[in-house]
Image 1 (cartoon, rainbow, N blue to C red):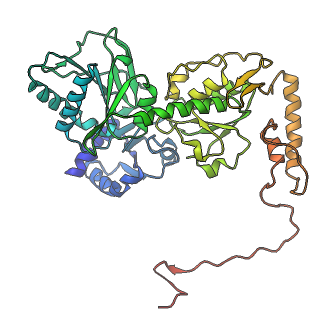
Image 2: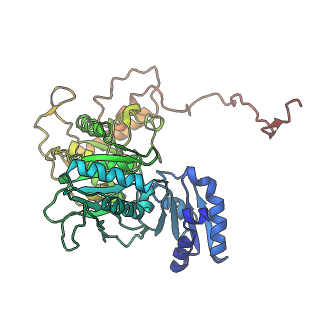
Image 3: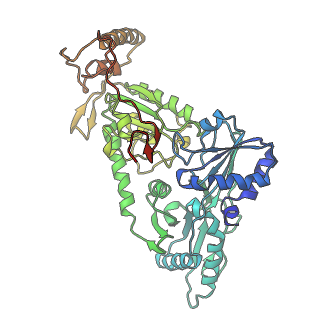
Length: 487
């Protein structure tokens, strides 16, 4: 019964039957793979024998996104996504999201919410991680019960709960409805339904503020873990007072200064990216809707800034992978909001988001403190015409005025450049370690030029030795006792 409840077997079966799907992909993160076969057996009892189920694991990109590439390999008609998710819209296939159901004490959470909310004197916006979405109705009841027991207080606490947009995503549909719910009680004021204001959304949650109110007026009460979803909230609403209820330890965390330090780190990366000449575009998703448009938009932005760009599709990036491309001064990671922020301290080059790339390469963009995590919110913005490259720019990193490389002045220069790159590439394939080379990272204008300066160029295909090298034969038998081992 616990398995059927946690994985919502009946709801999944209804979704598959109502859609008429016959090939269904079940996507599990690594931590839930242990239950995958039990889930398959439970679904077999509810579905017809004509429905084929496929378990997907070890996703190419972040496990929070729907693995549309893996689903396409098996010809799946829909995906059932289990576990932590970013609720990113899909491009080609419908998906049903089954969230984690973490344990929490609703009464303890309600007391922390009321106590801190009354002390702050601000209206409270309640946000939660998706793993605690199942407990929100119980928390609302516990808040109403605790509020009715408070007497002698003339203060009114205004509560606003963010609600899930939807748990079913279709490529041709967008969920825009917002279910705003208030809680009645002695110290709780429910916002009237006819008050319409600005609508916000983040991480699959949506809410609408009453008319005349701003986000800065609210205290954000986050219920959940200190994870990427919480970091996105801190960055996006960095002007708001934020507290976090730790459901694991059952206590309220009021100091989130450590998370807000991320904003200063991101500003430093933006300033460092302004001095870059060669930019690598990392494709961090092949399923989130709009990713291809964002790649083209980033290419156009980089071109108008007078810089070079290279596109890389390599799955989950790590320092070893990106170290193979030292000619890139900075990388732009195009992925969902929960995997966009990579700690690039261990990488050779900084890794920034599309929003940070716009700040770095568009001179008309100014840092205002506002932060955008979802790259889909940037698709509407188009790059402006590039300013004259003759104007020097002050670099905070170098401590002086610098001039960006102007690589594409006119069509004739571009044609000559392409011919020169071909020649450099041909020479790079033949150059040896003993040759002297003067092309350095700071002056190279293309990856081909930098390739010519490397001391290592891969296998020696012109070797005159035709004999194979030494090799070791593998063992035979089982790992617990190979055939060549003594008893």
